[in-house]
Image (cartoon, rainbow, N blue to C red; front, side, top):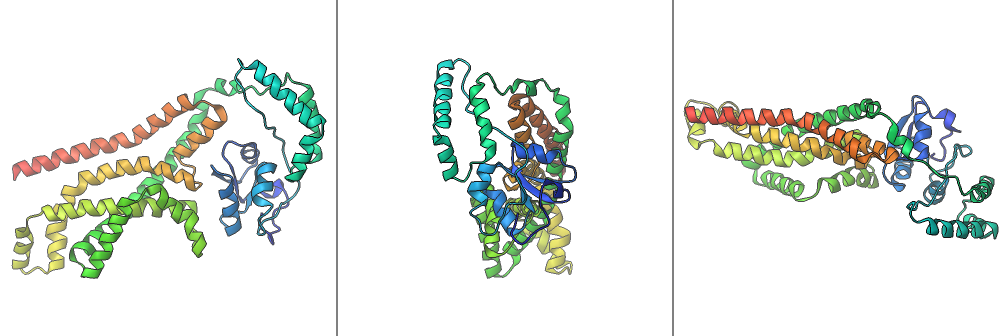
Length: 368
């Protein structure tokens, strides 16, 4: 935890705190067994300690080797309490490579009994009395980790967790799309009707966001801004990142819609005594938005899928939930199919809506 913060002296003080950990680790399993802990899941080892140092989270629980490398050298951090739990690292080989396994076992045994392994561990600050248990593991070569048990768990047991992730995905997508629609309309109006310098800024914004990857934009928002004193929560960074990116695409849809409205429409409104703002509000925009609506719906579908990218900033939405479950159970295929079906179930109704809107628009044009 952070130096100067004495609220946490062990895992018993973690309830009610935001605690970071590594996806699929023993530390994650330990945290999941403690009630009322706001667990923040990360895919990398360095990011949790960076978030801890700047105050995004209250503590980090990870394996001792990771903590010794990333946390111990950081002057802003300290260890809180003694180590908890127990985990073992192993080298995996195919069952058919029995000779290779025997050679590896012999090398590890020689390293341990000669004291060389202890010297290496002490060099990197990893040796403790718990390492003495390695002798028993080395002498008992029949011990192995059986991951097949995880494949026997019924798939329906994962549904509540996956549905929770799907709910977060829907929430992120809806809020982000609302931001994109409002900001995109503002950018279009500034670009078409604002002063020259304002139009240039709006154009630069649109071209920048359309020309750079969304993933890079999210990294800058979440990990880059703290370098200049701006810290965003994962949820806020997800809203802003997706919303600002898709606003650029929405702006182009609105611009195309406005340009498709005959100029005579606006001129007729002005001849009736309307101001330019009234003409834009009551005559031009309603027609332009009607034309742009199918494209907006298609963008909403794309945003649903792109929301999976927010998993890189510690947001546990549907894709991140799938990654966690698949990594701990190795059931990548079955869980992947379920997640694909969930994404399809969320996006297909929007596809039907877009198709219906296009048909209505076509029918309206034909009647005209």
